[in-house]
Length: 507
Image (cartoon, rainbow, N blue to C red; front, top):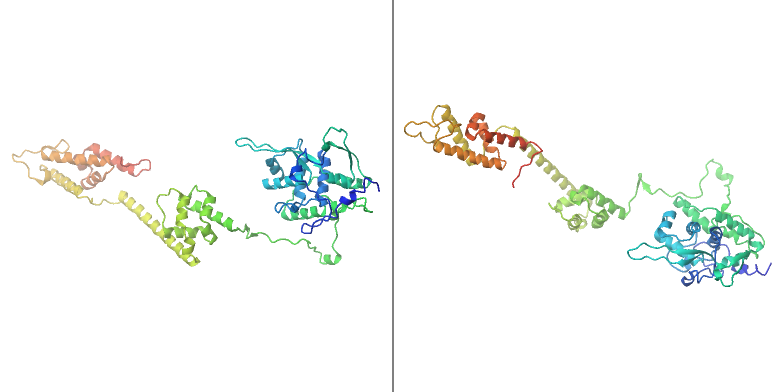
């Protein structure tokens, strides 16, 4: 055993224990404080390329010298498969200037997870800041630039010899000149792992198995590699996780082999995923925005927050409709979420049992049925008004005018001179001319007043006066009383009432 290789035996840890076991009784501990995470203050050396740097990453992942939970109470529990995946993306960059959004897109992790794993790589001595990214208000964020470093513990453990060829250059520029003979097989195993791409697990079961295999050495295979030290006699480069054990023949007697991994029950019941409390709030909020017209366009998260009490009590959208019918709704709504919060206040305390909610729903449905019948009656009455038989006018003024018109028509038909207001003909036997040629004296004034009143009613869209005259006296007599122009105008307005292309109103 050479003098250069002997010190490496002190720094090689025992096989990596599980995450719940006690601390590794191996010194020194692999941890770089924040002040030494810059390139100018780092004690490591710059990796020549991403391939050699990944060898060091796999060695750190399985050595057990760095465990994040020794230094913090949050974040990942171990330097495992996910950290290696992030390191793979960094190894392919030149220069190493990864943006957080880029790593999130490439790895599928969250922004916080990417920050955690970058911090772990710095604390393990595998990354060092060259330039720390900044975020200027109003401007684009600048990514940090890193230097891929190889920690000195890696060189000591594998017996790697380095030399500083330029005395004026920084210490992190030292180059490799050789490696201990006993560590060559270990370095070859690390080279195979560096060349193999670690991929994202496809399911929770495979991710749990990959994490377990990462702890046992399938990603880095350090549990067997640590035996490749100058202090050990035998060497092994095959991971124990890669071996496959066949079940005994007694287990295959029935011809059916059972998987050693128990299957979890499906999280879907009846083909649908079971919702938690927050999911039920959002589901009720979405149904309310679809059912209630005055909640259209409101934010579903805000409605979910407003209706959180009734949603937690197990209310459905039908129960809410029943309560709103009992509570009363507003005709004009300015802010839907605020009105809903007011109407639903203490609703779960008043209708605190399913029986009360069922009663409220029945009352709401009965009210809906009554409103539907009332609308049907209104439509029928409107149709009967336009399509049914004529009915006598209810206005007394209209009735007097109709009676006077009837009297004038009867007197004209009998050959007598029509008089205004039922008066006798004037002395002297002078007969007044026909209605269509103009009436003399008070008869002419009465017809003028009738036409003026009919003209005013037509200006307001009321054709009832002329329609009653036509139905009572006939079209010819009505035309003599009101004139053909007013009759034609009344017929046009009556036709427009039945059309959807015409709207009448007051100015």
